[in-house]
Length: 112
Length: 116
Image (cartoon, rainbow over all chains, first blue to last red):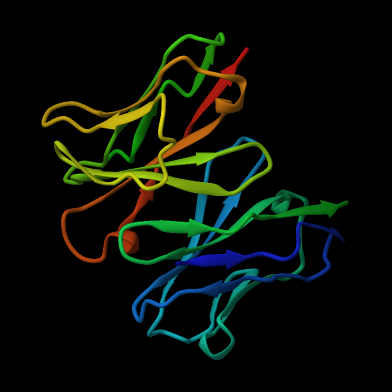
């Protein structure tokens, strides 16, 4: 069975602070995919990143960066110099064969 | 290339009525997945369909819920005799008929069902 744990339910930061969202996963699959999605108050899912299990390179995209550590089954997401527009619920997800398993989400509030 | 389309975007039903949610996959995609997001929760897998076949319905409630993906037309998620607990956002995703499907799942904007 697959499982994704996002232990942080809610985080509040002041604008321009850095923030890291944690994600730990469990799977028996040898090939799998990890995702992060953003869900703003409007409700749609905004795709942020996909990483496959064979690629442990960290990735940076603008103010966003991701740290994939297979040894600890973690796929953490850092926002640098946070902005009010970053306020949303962020979901980490694990894709195995046929279905995607989502974490319960972390609600990020960036205070001006 | 249009993305995954879902309609309606918002649906209001009274208890006991039927709800029909539609999902049109991306062009060239023959696999469809439905997920449900209850308020303040993450998305939960419901069902995986290919054209005219249900592949995995392990996440579907045993009663009142059904899904189909006919040879022609959109996939339909049908909820009979809705109850207040069915109020949720229902997301559809599609993927092409090759590769590891979850690598290429694209999500629609969701349908928000409110049961009064």
